[in-house]
Image (cartoon, rainbow, N blue to C red; front, top):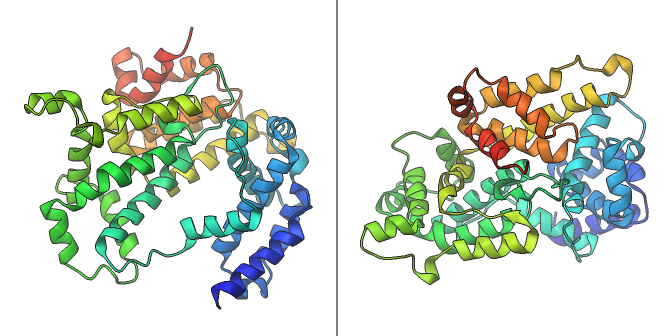
Length: 382
Protein backbone atom coordinates (compact mmCIF):
# COMPACT_ATOMS: atom_id res chain seq x y z
CA UNK A 1 0.00 0.00 0.00
CA UNK A 2 1.27 3.43 -0.86
CA UNK A 3 2.00 5.86 1.97
CA UNK A 4 -0.52 8.33 0.51
CA UNK A 5 -3.27 5.77 0.81
CA UNK A 6 -2.23 4.95 4.36
CA UNK A 7 -2.31 8.62 5.38
CA UNK A 8 -5.74 8.96 3.80
CA UNK A 9 -7.03 6.04 5.90
CA UNK A 10 -5.53 7.61 9.03
CA UNK A 11 -7.23 10.92 8.19
CA UNK A 12 -10.59 9.12 7.79
CA UNK A 13 -10.18 7.45 11.19
CA UNK A 14 -9.26 10.78 12.78
CA UNK A 15 -12.32 12.43 11.20
CA UNK A 16 -14.65 9.70 12.51
CA UNK A 17 -13.37 10.14 16.08
CA UNK A 18 -12.76 13.90 16.06
CA UNK A 19 -15.89 14.87 18.00
CA UNK A 20 -16.28 11.75 20.14
CA UNK A 21 -15.55 11.64 23.84
CA UNK A 22 -12.93 9.31 25.33
CA UNK A 23 -15.34 6.48 26.14
CA UNK A 24 -16.73 6.36 22.60
CA UNK A 25 -13.25 6.49 21.10
CA UNK A 26 -12.28 3.50 23.23
CA UNK A 27 -15.29 1.63 21.85
CA UNK A 28 -14.24 2.49 18.28
CA UNK A 29 -10.71 1.34 19.16
CA UNK A 30 -11.95 -2.04 20.38
CA UNK A 31 -13.93 -2.61 17.17
CA UNK A 32 -11.15 -1.37 14.90
CA UNK A 33 -8.46 -3.57 16.44
CA UNK A 34 -10.56 -6.66 15.65
CA UNK A 35 -11.79 -5.57 12.21
CA UNK A 36 -10.22 -7.73 9.42
CA UNK A 37 -10.72 -4.96 6.84
CA UNK A 38 -8.81 -2.42 8.93
CA UNK A 39 -5.99 -4.89 9.53
CA UNK A 40 -5.46 -5.03 5.77
CA UNK A 41 -4.09 -1.46 5.70
CA UNK A 42 -2.54 -1.14 9.18
CA UNK A 43 -0.84 -3.43 11.67
CA UNK A 44 -2.09 -3.79 15.24
CA UNK A 45 0.97 -1.86 16.43
CA UNK A 46 0.24 1.00 14.01
CA UNK A 47 -3.38 1.12 15.14
CA UNK A 48 -2.27 1.26 18.77
CA UNK A 49 -0.11 4.27 17.99
CA UNK A 50 -2.86 5.96 15.96
CA UNK A 51 -5.41 5.58 18.75
CA UNK A 52 -2.88 6.70 21.36
CA UNK A 53 -2.61 10.06 19.62
CA UNK A 54 -6.38 10.28 19.00
CA UNK A 55 -7.07 9.60 22.68
CA UNK A 56 -4.40 12.04 23.79
CA UNK A 57 -6.08 14.77 21.75
CA UNK A 58 -9.48 13.78 23.16
CA UNK A 59 -8.11 14.12 26.70
CA UNK A 60 -6.76 17.56 25.82
CA UNK A 61 -10.22 18.56 24.55
CA UNK A 62 -11.72 17.36 27.84
CA UNK A 63 -9.58 19.83 29.76
CA UNK A 64 -7.08 19.43 32.60
CA UNK A 65 -9.70 19.79 35.36
CA UNK A 66 -11.85 16.99 33.96
CA UNK A 67 -8.86 14.72 33.34
CA UNK A 68 -7.49 15.30 36.86
CA UNK A 69 -10.87 14.46 38.40
CA UNK A 70 -11.14 11.33 36.24
CA UNK A 71 -7.61 10.20 37.17
CA UNK A 72 -8.46 10.44 40.87
CA UNK A 73 -11.29 7.96 40.25
CA UNK A 74 -9.06 5.63 38.21
CA UNK A 75 -10.64 6.99 34.96
CA UNK A 76 -13.77 4.95 35.73
CA UNK A 77 -16.08 7.54 34.14
CA UNK A 78 -14.17 7.48 30.85
CA UNK A 79 -14.15 3.69 30.40
CA UNK A 80 -16.90 1.99 28.37
CA UNK A 81 -18.51 -1.21 29.70
CA UNK A 82 -16.78 -4.46 28.90
CA UNK A 83 -14.40 -7.16 30.04
CA UNK A 84 -12.51 -6.20 33.20
CA UNK A 85 -9.10 -7.10 31.77
CA UNK A 86 -9.74 -4.93 28.69
CA UNK A 87 -10.93 -2.04 30.84
CA UNK A 88 -7.85 -2.31 33.07
CA UNK A 89 -5.56 -2.09 30.03
CA UNK A 90 -7.47 0.96 28.83
CA UNK A 91 -7.40 2.50 32.31
CA UNK A 92 -3.61 2.45 32.51
CA UNK A 93 -3.29 3.55 28.92
CA UNK A 94 -5.30 6.66 29.85
CA UNK A 95 -3.06 7.24 32.87
CA UNK A 96 0.00 7.17 30.60
CA UNK A 97 -1.57 9.40 27.93
CA UNK A 98 -2.78 11.92 30.52
CA UNK A 99 0.63 12.14 32.20
CA UNK A 100 1.84 15.26 30.33
CA UNK A 101 -1.41 17.08 31.10
CA UNK A 102 -1.28 16.13 34.77
CA UNK A 103 2.34 17.26 34.87
CA UNK A 104 1.34 20.69 33.57
CA UNK A 105 3.00 20.47 30.15
CA UNK A 106 1.61 22.42 27.21
CA UNK A 107 -0.51 20.37 24.76
CA UNK A 108 0.88 19.96 21.28
CA UNK A 109 -0.32 22.44 18.65
CA UNK A 110 -0.25 19.83 15.87
CA UNK A 111 -3.49 18.66 14.28
CA UNK A 112 -4.43 15.11 15.16
CA UNK A 113 -3.59 13.65 11.74
CA UNK A 114 -0.17 15.33 11.73
CA UNK A 115 0.48 14.12 15.25
CA UNK A 116 -0.48 10.56 14.29
CA UNK A 117 1.84 10.52 11.29
CA UNK A 118 4.64 12.04 13.36
CA UNK A 119 4.22 9.38 16.04
CA UNK A 120 4.27 6.61 13.46
CA UNK A 121 7.37 8.05 11.83
CA UNK A 122 9.17 8.34 15.15
CA UNK A 123 8.34 5.00 16.74
CA UNK A 124 6.78 2.54 14.31
CA UNK A 125 8.65 2.90 11.04
CA UNK A 126 11.48 0.36 10.84
CA UNK A 127 14.93 1.91 10.82
CA UNK A 128 16.08 1.80 7.21
CA UNK A 129 19.64 3.07 7.29
CA UNK A 130 22.11 2.86 4.44
CA UNK A 131 24.97 3.46 6.87
CA UNK A 132 25.95 2.14 10.28
CA UNK A 133 26.05 5.60 11.89
CA UNK A 134 22.35 6.25 11.27
CA UNK A 135 21.37 2.77 12.39
CA UNK A 136 23.47 3.05 15.55
CA UNK A 137 22.14 6.47 16.58
CA UNK A 138 18.48 5.81 15.80
CA UNK A 139 18.49 2.42 17.50
CA UNK A 140 19.93 3.79 20.74
CA UNK A 141 17.67 6.85 20.71
CA UNK A 142 14.52 4.74 20.24
CA UNK A 143 15.65 2.29 22.91
CA UNK A 144 16.14 5.12 25.40
CA UNK A 145 12.80 6.73 24.51
CA UNK A 146 11.08 3.52 25.62
CA UNK A 147 13.04 3.44 28.88
CA UNK A 148 12.32 7.04 29.81
CA UNK A 149 8.70 6.68 28.70
CA UNK A 150 8.26 3.78 31.12
CA UNK A 151 9.83 5.77 33.98
CA UNK A 152 8.09 9.12 33.39
CA UNK A 153 5.75 10.20 36.20
CA UNK A 154 2.92 12.73 36.30
CA UNK A 155 4.45 15.02 38.88
CA UNK A 156 1.11 15.44 40.67
CA UNK A 157 2.93 16.57 43.83
CA UNK A 158 3.82 20.06 42.53
CA UNK A 159 5.60 21.09 45.74
CA UNK A 160 8.15 18.29 45.28
CA UNK A 161 10.15 18.62 42.02
CA UNK A 162 10.62 15.41 40.06
CA UNK A 163 14.05 13.82 39.66
CA UNK A 164 15.25 14.24 36.07
CA UNK A 165 15.04 10.57 35.14
CA UNK A 166 11.30 10.51 35.99
CA UNK A 167 10.39 13.86 34.42
CA UNK A 168 8.64 13.53 31.00
CA UNK A 169 10.37 16.60 29.46
CA UNK A 170 13.82 15.21 30.27
CA UNK A 171 13.60 12.65 27.44
CA UNK A 172 13.82 15.34 24.74
CA UNK A 173 16.89 17.13 26.15
CA UNK A 174 18.60 13.81 26.91
CA UNK A 175 18.10 12.77 23.28
CA UNK A 176 19.52 16.08 22.09
CA UNK A 177 22.59 15.64 24.29
CA UNK A 178 23.07 12.11 22.97
CA UNK A 179 22.96 13.24 19.35
CA UNK A 180 25.16 16.30 19.88
CA UNK A 181 27.70 15.09 22.44
CA UNK A 182 27.68 11.32 22.96
CA UNK A 183 26.86 9.02 20.05
CA UNK A 184 29.20 10.52 17.46
CA UNK A 185 32.16 10.17 19.81
CA UNK A 186 31.28 6.56 20.60
CA UNK A 187 31.10 5.72 16.89
CA UNK A 188 34.59 7.14 16.34
CA UNK A 189 36.14 4.61 18.75
CA UNK A 190 38.29 1.89 17.23
CA UNK A 191 36.33 -1.12 18.49
CA UNK A 192 33.01 0.37 17.33
CA UNK A 193 34.48 1.01 13.87
CA UNK A 194 35.65 -2.60 13.80
CA UNK A 195 32.17 -3.74 14.81
CA UNK A 196 30.64 -1.60 12.05
CA UNK A 197 32.90 -3.23 9.46
CA UNK A 198 32.45 -6.77 10.77
CA UNK A 199 29.00 -7.46 9.29
CA UNK A 200 26.25 -6.18 7.01
CA UNK A 201 24.20 -3.89 9.27
CA UNK A 202 21.60 -3.35 6.54
CA UNK A 203 20.23 -6.84 7.18
CA UNK A 204 16.73 -7.13 8.61
CA UNK A 205 16.79 -7.22 12.41
CA UNK A 206 20.05 -5.29 12.79
CA UNK A 207 18.50 -2.73 15.15
CA UNK A 208 17.14 -5.48 17.39
CA UNK A 209 20.58 -7.09 17.35
CA UNK A 210 22.20 -3.86 18.56
CA UNK A 211 19.70 -3.52 21.42
CA UNK A 212 20.28 -7.15 22.40
CA UNK A 213 24.03 -6.48 22.54
CA UNK A 214 23.46 -3.50 24.83
CA UNK A 215 21.09 -5.36 27.16
CA UNK A 216 23.43 -8.36 27.32
CA UNK A 217 25.85 -6.22 29.33
CA UNK A 218 29.17 -7.82 30.19
CA UNK A 219 32.61 -6.46 31.00
CA UNK A 220 33.79 -6.74 27.40
CA UNK A 221 30.85 -4.93 25.80
CA UNK A 222 32.31 -2.28 23.45
CA UNK A 223 29.16 -0.15 23.25
CA UNK A 224 28.77 0.09 27.01
CA UNK A 225 32.51 0.59 27.49
CA UNK A 226 32.63 3.68 25.29
CA UNK A 227 29.23 4.85 26.54
CA UNK A 228 30.53 4.88 30.12
CA UNK A 229 33.80 6.44 29.06
CA UNK A 230 32.04 9.27 27.25
CA UNK A 231 29.83 10.15 30.23
CA UNK A 232 32.80 10.04 32.57
CA UNK A 233 34.51 12.52 30.28
CA UNK A 234 31.82 15.07 31.16
CA UNK A 235 33.03 15.19 34.77
CA UNK A 236 35.15 18.36 35.17
CA UNK A 237 37.12 16.71 37.98
CA UNK A 238 38.33 13.98 35.61
CA UNK A 239 39.13 16.52 32.93
CA UNK A 240 41.19 18.56 35.40
CA UNK A 241 42.97 15.46 36.69
CA UNK A 242 44.11 14.73 33.14
CA UNK A 243 45.53 18.21 32.84
CA UNK A 244 42.91 19.34 30.33
CA UNK A 245 41.13 21.79 32.59
CA UNK A 246 37.34 22.11 32.59
CA UNK A 247 35.07 20.80 29.87
CA UNK A 248 35.06 22.84 26.68
CA UNK A 249 31.93 25.02 26.33
CA UNK A 250 31.07 23.46 22.96
CA UNK A 251 31.24 19.98 24.48
CA UNK A 252 29.31 20.50 27.70
CA UNK A 253 25.87 18.91 28.31
CA UNK A 254 25.29 20.35 31.76
CA UNK A 255 24.04 23.77 30.68
CA UNK A 256 21.42 22.18 28.40
CA UNK A 257 20.20 19.98 31.26
CA UNK A 258 20.08 22.90 33.68
CA UNK A 259 18.16 25.17 31.29
CA UNK A 260 15.59 22.50 30.43
CA UNK A 261 15.05 21.61 34.10
CA UNK A 262 14.46 25.28 34.98
CA UNK A 263 11.96 25.55 32.14
CA UNK A 264 10.01 22.42 33.08
CA UNK A 265 10.45 22.44 36.87
CA UNK A 266 12.36 19.23 37.57
CA UNK A 267 15.69 18.49 39.24
CA UNK A 268 18.50 18.48 36.65
CA UNK A 269 21.37 16.00 36.63
CA UNK A 270 24.74 17.10 38.01
CA UNK A 271 28.22 15.60 37.81
CA UNK A 272 27.36 13.28 40.70
CA UNK A 273 24.48 11.85 38.62
CA UNK A 274 26.74 10.50 35.88
CA UNK A 275 26.17 6.89 37.11
CA UNK A 276 22.41 7.36 36.61
CA UNK A 277 22.90 8.88 33.14
CA UNK A 278 25.05 5.87 32.26
CA UNK A 279 22.50 3.43 33.68
CA UNK A 280 19.56 4.54 31.50
CA UNK A 281 20.75 2.66 28.40
CA UNK A 282 21.04 -0.57 30.39
CA UNK A 283 17.32 -0.75 31.23
CA UNK A 284 14.76 -2.62 29.12
CA UNK A 285 11.87 -0.23 28.45
CA UNK A 286 9.36 -2.99 27.72
CA UNK A 287 10.19 -4.79 30.97
CA UNK A 288 9.83 -1.57 32.94
CA UNK A 289 6.48 -0.74 31.31
CA UNK A 290 5.17 -4.23 32.07
CA UNK A 291 6.36 -4.01 35.66
CA UNK A 292 4.69 -0.64 36.16
CA UNK A 293 1.39 -1.91 34.75
CA UNK A 294 1.45 -4.75 37.28
CA UNK A 295 2.21 -2.36 40.14
CA UNK A 296 -0.55 0.05 39.09
CA UNK A 297 -3.12 -2.74 38.76
CA UNK A 298 -2.36 -4.10 42.23
CA UNK A 299 -2.62 -0.58 43.64
CA UNK A 300 -6.08 -0.24 42.13
CA UNK A 301 -7.13 -3.67 43.40
CA UNK A 302 -6.08 -2.86 46.97
CA UNK A 303 -7.12 0.79 47.27
CA UNK A 304 -9.78 1.37 44.59
CA UNK A 305 -11.28 -2.01 43.62
CA UNK A 306 -14.18 -2.10 41.18
CA UNK A 307 -15.97 -4.64 43.40
CA UNK A 308 -15.43 -6.48 46.66
CA UNK A 309 -14.50 -9.66 44.81
CA UNK A 310 -11.78 -7.74 42.96
CA UNK A 311 -10.14 -6.36 46.11
CA UNK A 312 -6.56 -7.44 46.79
CA UNK A 313 -5.49 -8.40 50.30
CA UNK A 314 -4.10 -5.72 52.59
CA UNK A 315 -0.40 -5.19 51.91
CA UNK A 316 -0.47 -6.65 48.38
CA UNK A 317 0.63 -3.35 46.85
CA UNK A 318 3.51 -2.93 49.30
CA UNK A 319 4.63 -6.49 48.52
CA UNK A 320 4.50 -5.75 44.77
CA UNK A 321 6.86 -2.81 45.27
CA UNK A 322 9.23 -4.87 47.42
CA UNK A 323 9.21 -7.58 44.74
CA UNK A 324 10.12 -4.99 42.09
CA UNK A 325 13.01 -3.73 44.23
CA UNK A 326 14.33 -7.29 44.57
CA UNK A 327 13.65 -8.39 41.00
CA UNK A 328 14.77 -5.53 38.76
CA UNK A 329 18.45 -5.02 38.02
CA UNK A 330 20.40 -1.77 38.43
CA UNK A 331 17.93 -0.54 41.06
CA UNK A 332 15.14 -0.03 38.53
CA UNK A 333 12.76 -1.13 41.28
CA UNK A 334 13.75 1.97 43.25
CA UNK A 335 12.63 4.09 40.31
CA UNK A 336 9.31 2.24 40.14
CA UNK A 337 8.69 3.11 43.81
CA UNK A 338 9.65 6.76 43.23
CA UNK A 339 7.30 6.93 40.25
CA UNK A 340 4.55 5.50 42.48
CA UNK A 341 5.17 8.35 44.94
CA UNK A 342 4.24 10.85 42.22
CA UNK A 343 1.54 8.86 40.42
CA UNK A 344 -0.32 7.02 43.20
CA UNK A 345 -1.81 9.14 46.02
CA UNK A 346 -1.51 6.52 48.78
CA UNK A 347 2.28 6.45 48.37
CA UNK A 348 3.25 9.35 50.60
CA UNK A 349 6.29 10.09 52.75
CA UNK A 350 5.16 7.82 55.59
CA UNK A 351 4.46 4.97 53.16
CA UNK A 352 8.02 5.27 51.81
CA UNK A 353 9.46 5.32 55.32
CA UNK A 354 7.69 2.08 56.27
CA UNK A 355 8.59 0.47 52.95
CA UNK A 356 12.28 1.29 53.39
CA UNK A 357 12.23 -0.04 56.96
CA UNK A 358 10.97 -3.37 55.67
CA UNK A 359 13.96 -3.68 53.32
CA UNK A 360 16.39 -4.57 56.11
CA UNK A 361 17.27 -4.30 59.77
CA UNK A 362 20.03 -1.73 59.38
CA UNK A 363 20.59 1.45 57.39
CA UNK A 364 23.52 -0.22 55.68
CA UNK A 365 21.40 -3.14 54.46
CA UNK A 366 18.60 -0.82 53.30
CA UNK A 367 20.97 1.42 51.35
CA UNK A 368 22.57 -1.63 49.76
CA UNK A 369 19.20 -2.94 48.57
CA UNK A 370 17.64 0.36 47.44
CA UNK A 371 20.20 3.20 47.32
CA UNK A 372 18.23 5.38 44.89
CA UNK A 373 15.05 5.10 46.94
CA UNK A 374 16.82 5.80 50.24
CA UNK A 375 18.53 8.86 48.79
CA UNK A 376 15.22 10.11 47.35
CA UNK A 377 13.50 9.68 50.71
CA UNK A 378 16.31 11.44 52.59
CA UNK A 379 16.08 14.40 50.21
CA UNK A 380 12.32 14.86 50.61
CA UNK A 381 11.25 18.05 52.39
CA UNK A 382 10.45 17.50 56.07
